[in-house]
Image (cartoon, rainbow, N blue to C red; front, side, top):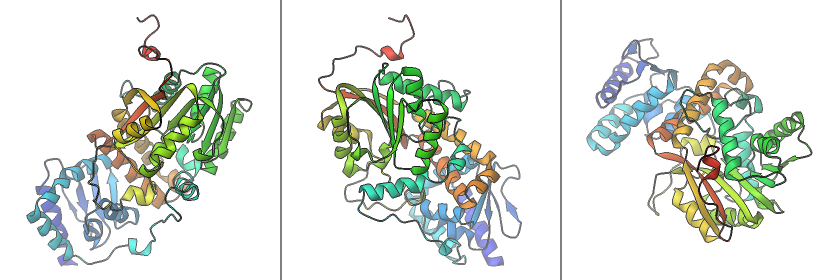
Length: 420
């Protein structure tokens, strides 16, 4: 045990020496603490092999599993740890440092608690309707009570639209719903389709404030059940319909289509199917708003995609694509992009609100789900916030119309009354 303690201290000192930001403190299984006593974040080592379990082999999946299965715990502020981790990432380009680190890690006991767990798996042909349904249920059927703990009262599970960081999450989410309705140029009597409607916030907002008829589709039965309850409570059953349905199975014609936070589930191989289907469903003069997360990463074609923590535990089969990929395919099927807006910093701030609310309701979250689920979501959302802050990820709202649609000059929906 003494050897493991000394080796763990050497690893901590090595990592600390390679960072320009204040490192997290570290508390060992013996109760000994290294680092500043007032550190915002403390990594707790549960056993002599904790650091080996968390860092070998080096990947976000291995580190995430070490936290989820309690080889380590993270006390205090998550974002300090994320900043430190981002500082250490360039170590990969220093072979000498990496070799030194790996040699130290291999001196620790090869014990970890994740061996007791089975990684979640999704079966079936990639992006078949059956497999997509299973993947969505894995993510969204975590339990409505769990999501209610950290989302705003309307349960909007996509980035808000902040004009000031001091605003409340509820106000920023309400603004986002209204902005989408304005970008869709909704008029009373319009027929709106919301693809991936979640708990129904957008279709209810559009029906209440813009007088539309709306259909929301989701692959999550739990979301649909709660959305129907909220539709009924709002007295909107004659104007809003919620369905458990794949977008590929939707029929009819719609004056406006919104897709908010669903695009990430489509997959690169299905982009043409996705945009072609929405093009088919949209009336000749209709408007599509596609709101989706993008990545700045441009991997080589032959580069093997490694399993990540998010793809394994949070978004099975999820795929983030660069902005130009969706623009190219959308235009290939007949759309024209008429407005594109980045909400990147708003998403970072939204996620920080969600993490704070989740941490504040830790005990309730464990009661609604379990400790493992709490840790998965805490780590996933904190890591995502850091990625949006750094620019590794972004999120765009793109407004599309069919090419023959008459042009609307200027962003009238964005101008103050009386502005010219």
